Length: 244
Length: 221
Image (cartoon, rainbow over all chains, first blue to last red; front, side):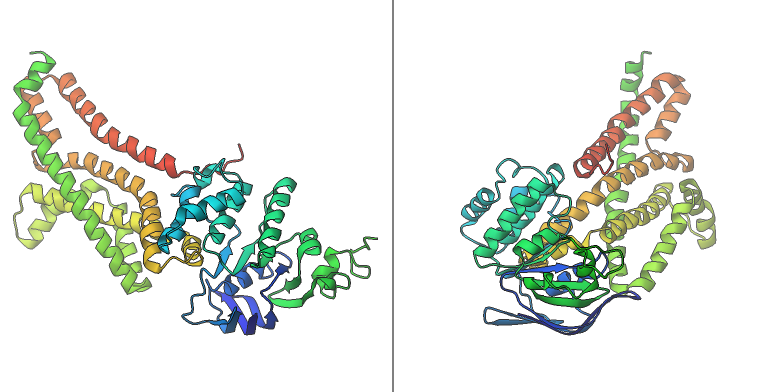
């Protein structure tokens, strides 16, 4: 469970997140949605502990252990993150990108773990290429595989569907569902309402740097936040029309 | 005398000139790079106020032509300090000054432009800060900086020819001296051109190859 206590984040004079107080579960699939520029990716980076809030604290309770930010706690790789642009290390092949975290952690079964990931994400056709030689969908799978090699308990993913065609999105969703079924917590920032409607266990809506609505998937049936109401075309919102 | 006979007859002089050019280049490259790295480290430790001063100096030196710097060291500087310095050391000092701040600029740009997200990715993959520096930061910064560094050393090699104007017996001056004896400018200067085509051209080609390994085409083609 994430507990956010008066969390705020600024970049220069620009306040991106302000006074966020909430508890966000980490089991199942948590989907974070909101308009562009609302602070979703910033929230993700704070929750992944790669950035620290300028105000307030973030506490994470994960399977009996506690982590706090700001502070010196390093929850990685139990908590890991796949960023919007994947950021596969460009000087390493896809295979080397998978191997480096395992070799750095001095695992004995590097070859077995890597082989398992290659099979799981069907990467054998491009695993020896460099990141600038693979497609967006392939890079997304590779980044996800790299995040998984060290058996994380929670994965935060920023806009995994961006730039993917429908078939690639379907393949990715299949992988995400499999991950969730295996007990790994998923925290996904996405613009895909379809994905949220089908797969989300919990929803978090970020608007103008605050959390305007959150709850189980059922909130989609009666949205209260402006973003969800506009996205779902709820009557009564300017410019919105009912879907049925 | 045929071209080959000329080159053979004066091979000793040509070789000595090449040695002087090589000395200028090697000392400038190695020494300049080490000092530039030290200056970059000072800027990292000193923060923005120190970096602004160093950037200002680098900007000023980049604006002044190499020949002006060389002649300033050779004439006014020595007169002001009331010293006499061998032309070789004067040329070396001028080339070092140019190279130090050019290489500093290359290093600073490579470090400043380094995408921080690669570090964040290393952290979430469980790498320690030392491992991130060793396996991610250093290789990527080298990839960004090395082609530019090679191109800069080629510029230093070509700039070293100006040392002939203050009587340093480097390659070009030797070629001029021999030409004044045999008066075979086509042979002499064609040989010079070929020499630089092989040395500088090879280095430039390698830099281009390194750049092609890292370049990513963002065009819509």
